[in-house]
Amino acid sequence: MRIELAESYGFCFGVKRAIKIAEENQNSATYGPLIHNSKEIERLNRDFSVGLSEDHKTFKSGDRAVIRTHGIPKNELEELMERKVEVVDATCPYVTKPQQICQEMSERGYDIVIFGDDAHPEIKGVKSYAKDGALVVTSPKDLEDVKLKDKIALVAQTTRRVEDYLEVASYLIPRHKEVRVFNTICNATFDNQEAVRKLSKRADVMIIIGGKNSSNTKQLYNIAKDNCDDSYLIEDESELDFFWFENKELCGISAGASTPDWIIQKVIDSIECRVNAL
Ligand code: SF4
Image 1: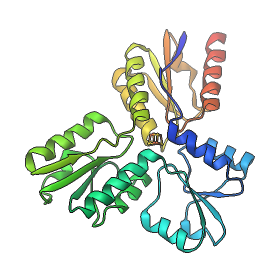
Image 2 (image 1 turned 45 degrees about the vertical axis):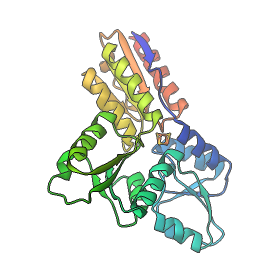
Image 3 (image 1 turned 135 degrees about the vertical axis):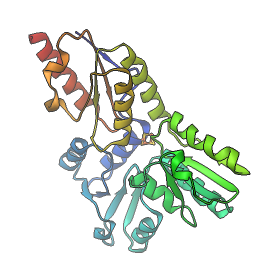
Image 4 (image 1 turned 90 degrees about the horizontal axis):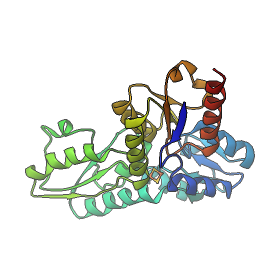
């Protein structure tokens, strides 16, 4: 069996940047998981004494708080500043962008619609920048029976599929006088998605490596599954089941934007070792 990596996979620019920032700020703590990968968070703690706090209230004056890649709500950032916590912002610039759009467009009188998952930390943060709140939707269905102004600004969670975003935009455009659609889907996600789409059309089995709570990893898995029935989502090599590879010729591999290279390599080594031994 051959193993082939997708043309684009794994760590994106935003995650690489956040990890570098964390490594440069030893003896600090991140507010919320810096990235959606528990193994990498353990490594930062072990090797760089970068802890993790799930509650911004635990930071005291003089503490150093590294803001996670997905950003935090505006009021929490303000509270940290007021308490004189040293804030190191590792929010990905692609997440800062929709935050700014929400703030600016809501100040200009636009209703804000966000295409994304209301419960996701990124969206909680982005939404908080809209002056009078924002409507978060996952499909055009959520827009039925909702009364909105004539002027609407639409942004998307960075990890969403373009095709799904277009459905929401297509629903809004004929129903309102002015709809400003901002492309806030990040290229890293798009590149990884396109590469997985291409590879999964040829592969007999697809392995997607990443955190089970990572939205972009799940998107990759869904795309793979659309094209290749034998697609599996795993966090590391311990979850491999070697029956998946029986009678398969091509195993495609991809990984979410929060998956470090060392985990990907361990999975590959493990598959090669076991499959070749069969
Ligand atoms: S996937 Fe995109 S938005 Fe998310 S951290 Fe990476 S570069 Fe930033």
